[in-house]
Amino acid sequence: MRRPGAARLRSGLCPRCEEKQADRRDQRRAVAAALMLHASETERRTATAKQLHQDVTAQAWIREHRWAQVREPAPLRARALK
Image (cartoon, rainbow, N blue to C red; front, side, top):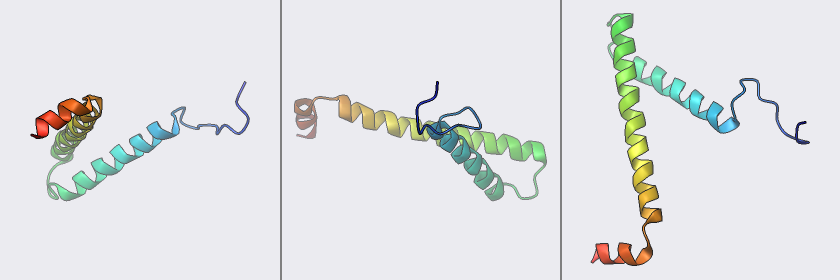
């Protein structure tokens, strides 16, 4: 039974996952447009996949660094800044 007021999802993904999927699609298109205008389809796909992997990995490292700062107790952060 569905919750009253719950949105039905066409893709079966939660709204956050749908947004992330759309964001990745937009990133791939932007990278493909910026890279190798005269390259073959295979070269474009390879370059796009590589660039997307680098972008996602960088975002993951940034997110992990932020979480590490949140998890670290305040006294340790204060000592690290001295």
